[in-house]
Length: 238
Image (cartoon, rainbow, N blue to C red):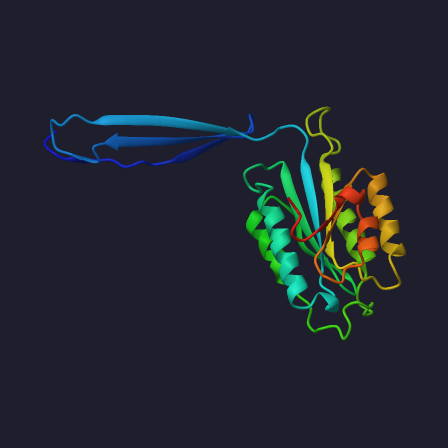
């Protein structure tokens, strides 16, 4: 009494781990500023958000950083990969996680399996080719697609194993998706990469390929997907 009152909306999130839900509340008073004796309307609102407590989703991004990807292909690759990552709602749903692997002459783990969207986006941008290939349409001696696929599958297995030993029905095996971004110009042809892909398919991984260069080896990229309809070019990812 005797003093003015000022109140503004104040969202607060209260996670409830046991239910897999988050409740976000807003408190709002109108008018915002009031003198003693004025009528104030206070509105309280709670918005619950629950993520799936069922099957997990793990997505592996496999990025080509060989010399044939220099400049625009790398740009297209990063744009497409980040666009895909943004659709996963990483961070909003802890049962959805992503891992980023790059490859050239060898494979590198850029980001381990995580639900941190910022970490995934930074990892997608991190590594780029150091030089331009003399002829990007020809193998350049540092494009080992099979090593990238192998490392991605290894990371998916690690994520899969995290749920093993849990109580029956508590943490089912994850749905797994491997997305390869490349031009498909592989050292020694596509055979070694196809063998790695076949192993991923045997383990139940859905494999998607995305061509990110005008000179893509279309046949190889189609063979590095679960089916022809899982082979894409940048621009038709919808």
